[in-house]
Image (spheres, one colour):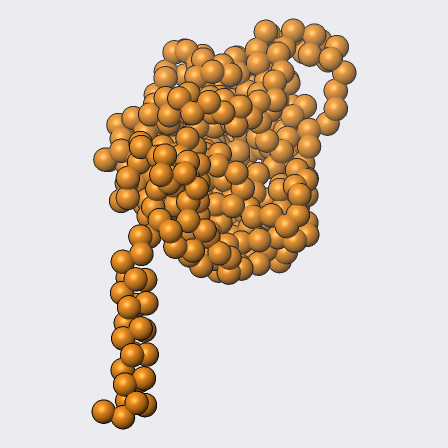
Length: 356
């Protein structure tokens, strides 16, 4: 046999050995190429770019996830705009669900194939693959789909702490929910109604008011009308709310104070229309010795054990039908600009889901 033929055969065998090694190489040690949304400046939806990034093998305490569904939240818009400034460049997105692809050497609570979800693992959920710290994950139980988990875990845990911790809603109380046709708003209506409250929902159009009533609101009022607070009191016979959940901010905040009962609580947890106007503390006294708070979902779920307890309560509410996943729109990861445009136009109802 000619030496050139022998050399060719040896080279072929070497390539086969390398191929065999790659096929046998454990997934945990591979670097994967993923698609992730990145911004390098703050601004309009167009600053978001889908970029190819390398995802390394998970660290000893991490889990690598193949994401199947990604949740959208309005805080994503605030962060993209720079209202909540972030170091640049940065990813966006807080919540997602998917399947475990690989686990770090020290991870014992998850295995490959487990369905998991998260909502506070750091920015970067707008991606198809991602490494996440194991203590930031919760296993998705049977009876809850990936889409339900991704669309509800952030919004649902927001509603959970608002209804169960910020103010423990009791049967017979009056609860006012602004933006009641939105993702969190509809969950608040559903869950508060199940807790026995009389639920008043507000929304920005007649169509959205219908959605709020479908979600469980006893009364729905169009807050785009100047006299909406007067209408509320007429519909309730003058009875004001024990607790007001306000995620709108600028357009509703002052009238929220008018709609709270004496010693009632106004919960400002968002600013969809812009930051709420500054007030003097004395105004709370004049409006009826009101209480005012500005809470956030993240501190309520900072501890891993508490996070999983809260998620278990949410998943039980989903499985029992108390909390329903109302996905109003779906966008591909490549359509992320359109997803943000739709949200900012306030022409969406229910939750927005992003599919990798």
